[in-house]
Image (cartoon, rainbow, N blue to C red):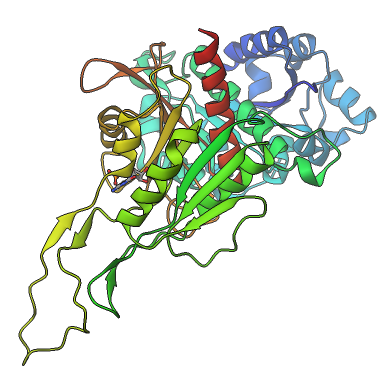
Length: 443
Ligand code: C5P
């Protein structure tokens, strides 16, 4: 398998020396790293240190006349270009990232090698701010960080502590372990994305789900009031359809239970069309026992009108007819409660929230007995209904160090994902579920 390519940008912070350790650690993991340094970074650490660890010349300048180090001259002699590096990298990391580079990225400035390469790069990207706490807290820096997030950067938040300048506060480069975890996740996503486009290349097919049955719900439900009116929501079904298509591409036999959407039925997928939540429940109920993985991506209506009028409800002299709502079955909760006891059946839910994303998602994961919960914030740019992209946090029950305590004291692992195409995200979710199932069965 090809090794993972990391492009590391180092900028002018006292924490630049810590980035040497990152390159060393990635080398031990079998990753290949290339390093680009800003002029200020070279004041803190010499390019030779990074070149020695990465076993390749460090990119330090765009033009021969501005190259003031042997490394830069070597790099130019080898014809290395910022575009080549941008195409080569699977993951781009800037650690440490100063207020200056963050401002430049937020505004698309490309005035040296690193910033030009950044602008030409299209994959997952991680920013690790490190600076004086006052500079970090300055609203303009915060606005620039928010802009970077919006442009798809994952931010590994700086730590709080005593800074080199003797101030105390937030601004220390994050723990290297946290940066390495974020890079590993991004590398996994990048690998999954490459798998997602395999059919367009000559790469062998990803058959991680071969022999498994995957059940997916998608789209909205419609709850009729009368023959012409219904209650529904804005779901387009894109995420669920992407999951069904991707699962089929990964070798699974797929049943898609779909509410009313304007999408074509995916090729090779058994699609069951339903209208109401009760019909969706009935279809899931009928297919659940055969499913090895069930993913509930539908935006199911929580309520339905108690009575469905046989005739169109008329305006009665301006008096509004009362509508009593009753609760629909919770399909995900039902599936969570009826999993095979041997752990061979995984249930994954989705949660779309407008506030307290993680707290709500954690409680949903536990309440509905999910093995995975994919949470997205409706307020995030590029996420949620109708978009072709999504930005989510993947929650799983876990006991490792990143876990946070849930409602009953159990631990939950939360992994924020970069902004991704829904099909790429589907590959990440399904890859995780396939591996989780394998590990469960191996235990
Ligand atoms: O509780 P909430 O509706 O936010 O939960 C969202 C998750 O639960 C989604 O995975 C959705 O498909 C599922 N759900 C369901 N049946 C319902 C309501 C939600 O399967 N009646």
